Amino acid sequence: MKDKIPLSGIVVPLLYLFLAIACLFFSNEIYVATFNVIPVFDYEYNIISMAIWNFTYVVLIRFIYTKHQNVYLELIPVFALVEFLHFLMCIYIFYIFQTQSIVVTGIIHLGLLYLFLYERKLFKR
Image (cartoon, helix red, strand yellow):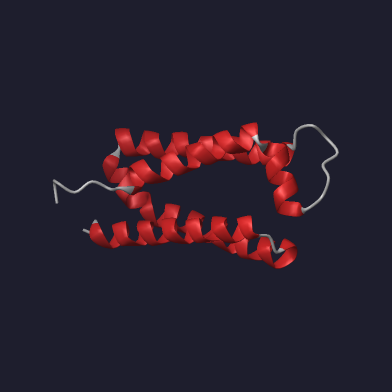
């Protein structure tokens, strides 16, 4: 078990960092593509707040992964719960707005949920 490392400690922060950067620079385009409306402001502050949340999540996961790997392994079920809640939120938003980008986001969250559940099984003590 010493040679195994949790892949989610690398992949999940990388994906969320990419998402945070995209949300910061393309907040208006994401808003138009998701909700099919014309934005009133130059920047969509709800999308920017999502970017800030994603960046905070990246810093939290990477700090715990690099400094306290045992704590990270104990928190994998909590991270899986966060991904499950994100998946449920994507289903709800798709039910309301029915855009394709939400389906892709939901599939990505489902894949990350599966990754966390697999690692939970793999690193169970």
